[in-house]
Length: 245
Image (cartoon, rainbow, N blue to C red; front, side, top):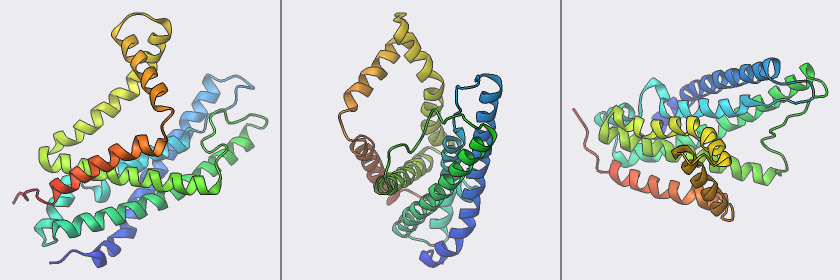
């Protein structure tokens, strides 16, 4: 059985339904978080934060790594075992994921506009204190969307390679640093400001130094070069990776 673009085309829209569901669930969770912050913590005049967009992007991450309700290793092993060449699988996966991520980002943008509209309706006079697209023109938005889509493609390739090599442990190689970052970044920066001399403070000073050092380098270069290198290494491995019977 030859798995090619014809099969990928038939699967494309079924996968998009899964992407849309993940984004929608993420957006709803973010919108609920925004409402809770406004209701319990913010005072009149503090404004609001549109967390729906951020959580929608988290939903897109989930959709990329769990597409078709299968992990990356299962998708790769199943496709190659059914007769698809490794090269064909990677080509269709890269093109499909890029287009799906672009469409998904368009959906996230529409949901962001809907969230802002709801906030203006329910919180008249309040302002968005964390605008995501402030000062960006149409060209910058398009380039940014393409860059984010490529970043998600890189994540898909890296996770696939790690899971093919290490099984489920490969997923945690990616997930654990992201999870730890979400818990340690804010406390470490606070400890650095207080200069407590702890390990958290040392981490906070390192993060501040890294941010200041990298701030003079274009974002596309800082994120794009590591993503391109990791993607290339992942592709080279997957072109030769063994298939488990």
